[in-house]
Figure 1 (cartoon, one colour):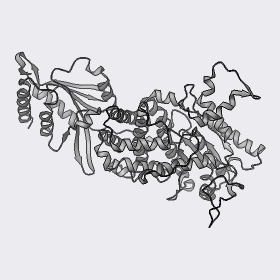
Figure 2 (figure 1 turned 90 degrees about the vertical axis):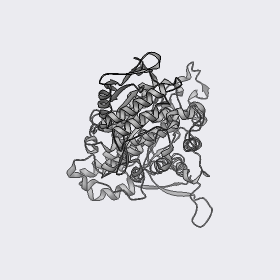
Figure 3 (figure 1 turned 60 degrees about the vertical axis):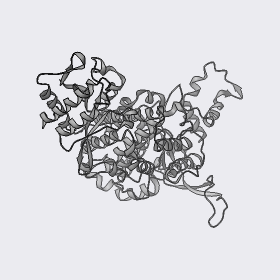
Figure 4 (figure 1 turned 90 degrees about the horizontal axis):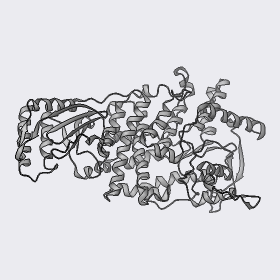
Length: 575
């Protein structure tokens, strides 16, 4: 089969090249036939609109029971264009960083790379005089070996959280780059344009500005990546894991991510230029030993906790500048624990809450929610019952502070051997009192699965999990919301039905922000002197800090008064 395939391939390339008008596109059908004849059943697919947006020339797949499995990618240049420094170009650097299995060729020379390293190199022929092509001795055999190695390369199972975070970050980044390029070339699909417009209306006001294409691409790509990840954690039969299955596996405790992923991961995604990389993410997760990855969940050191890798390691590999712009860094667990215990003691000693953070008492407060009416009338209720100790982390990241609050309260129940009361307490008095706001998709998704795993008892020794595991109801959600804390609270209505759940998430967050009597605001807000949060609402609040006793401060360098940290302190004071 190999000799016959190469005979036809070489004849086709010779014929096209001799005419003098061939380009790299001319030889693509011949290369497709070569690959598919070497490995019957394999498909080498070239779609121009995907290539236009920065995807490699070919995606090579093999049919599987539950769809198709990506074997690897091929990038083709014109004959004679494989220069010694081609790997240093932006495009190849991006491919080598993101793609675990890649062939680069000019139709005569072939280079095979795995995990960014060149593994094999072979040449079928060289260019001679008068546009002739001269076969290399043993060229067919060497190229055949290279292509067979490429086609037989197996996806390696991942068992370490840092390895998974790095691989996810690389694939997510290439999805992001393709989305950015689609907008820059004005070929972005209605799916992408529609979601960008929706998120600009509800979440980030200037997201539709030309310079914000990368920010939207970040959100969209991270939603795909962490939607798949959240689904994979819940999958009990990972061998057939796919993006099609994932939309049904994301837990209802995160309705926003579940609905968002359902809308963007279905059949409409098949037409997107980055869809192959989304399926690669699913394949990576299918070949991940999730039990090993999460084995150290709940460990107290930075080096051991896998959640650190799904936050810091991911963002550092994905885009260090994004992490710096948003000022997001890990807060050490001992610091968090000290602050939580300090707040608990203050509540007990200074605020008349004998149970501290575990306090389950309710109070009657003035109603600030115009949506709450007197039953049977259109009259706004004057009062409403609320838990007294409501806790909000306005920049919750991966939920470290909320996790510590749950841990602290649960430890008190454990000290009393009160496992029988735990589930009822969680349902009635814990979930309704804990809230978190987060703007970045990656930590938002991580916070949800981290708190979900904790409440399921996954951070406890196996022999203790059963009696301390909480089973979420079908309509229960965690009070962690994707929202911009530093934007004013507005009610959003009138969005298209398919995107109304985006407004539902923001409106729910706004009710917490505006209407609930929050007693405790705790967390470690981001710090960034070059603030990316310049909305009028928070800027107006911060202006109160520009004066003392009604007189201007006369600050010569007001930059640090615009630090995000200052804005979050001002939000906490306002709240």
